[in-house]
Length: 262
Image 1 (cartoon, rainbow, N blue to C red):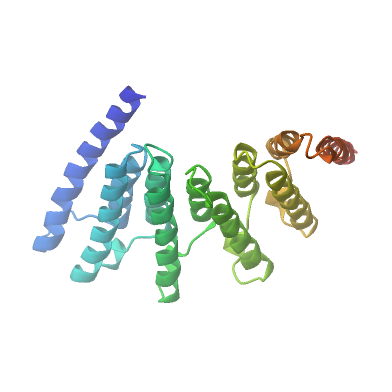
Image 2: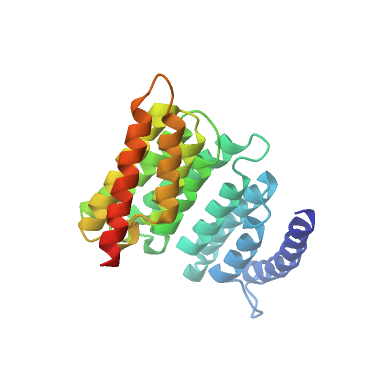
């Protein structure tokens, strides 16, 4: 891991030095090569793989620098797009859960996501949040380990579902990645019966959406495994029906599998 991280740092140092030279060209208004939003995105992407708070903060600073440079030079090619923002989200998500930084990272992710929505409303079409952006924030909350984090992740998933079902935003269609992330969070939560109930509700929602024609939410082996894990962990002397529910769901899953093979 140390070798991998140090490799990413060396990569960042190189691309950052190139970017700073290009920025100087843009500020001095000479005829030498200038940066574009893609240049900034490359540097931010290199930061997003490091997984530290410092790297995430630098990624966010570069995002702001790109936006400010676009406004000061009048060069719209420097305005960050959804790819640039997604890399910054990924930088914070990589830090989530490390050294007690889960809450800070997840909160920054959601704040940036809200900024994306606000900018899109103001006419910046290129920053419109997509499924990947939402999945990244959901992942940040799910692995943060802070109280109430799973509920926040699930609330974002429901925002995606409502946006898609209302026809308001088809680019925010939920997928199996989002559902599996939240299901696994409930399975790891240690919250027994409550976690099992939430998992059942999510599973029903997946099946409902798939029947409505959403192709990317069909339950897979990972979803089945997380669901059964939640039910198994809910079994106790105070919840004797847990084992019966697990058996019932296992039968249901087998029927679905048999139906898919026909």
